[in-house]
Length: 206
Image 1 (tube, one colour):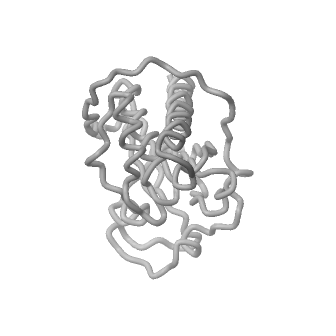
Image 2: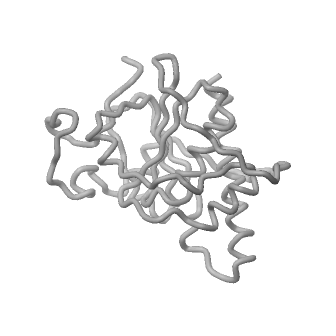
Image 3: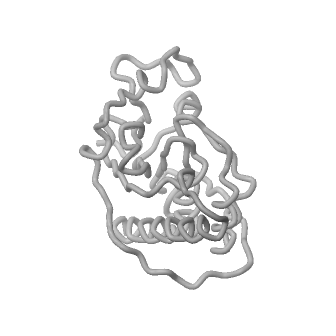
């Protein structure tokens, strides 16, 4: 099987790269609550690690043929998928080309930006991206990881036919309630869970 496979969830013929389709997200991705049961899952508690105080900008790698191309997906591309993308760039040692996107791109979560800054990573200027735009640009990936919560699994996009698919269910930061301090406690927990999941993924692909 070829290393890079076209990102697509269309079940019929595909338009050429750059073409457009008039399908709703649900139609295009065949959403039907099958995400969690068809993808590998990752669970478990995660240790906190020492963090640097000064954020550093994580630059995009140049995508070469020798790099494993990984796409992280959630609904809005505003929190979990952004964190996963950034941590893979930080820890991947130049061996992975990491991107993230969502079905319905929203606004970058300000508390996620703060939590990542505490880990020494600046994502404040990251755009939120649509998975449909990546498809239209002809993007290809070796691995697709969805990071939706268990409760929102039916809304997570799935990509039939890919060589490697994973589902990592993390709590949705947009649902966190309480004071700013209480929300940040939960945000840091999700951040650290995602970082550990990414580090485990890297070890598995070494």
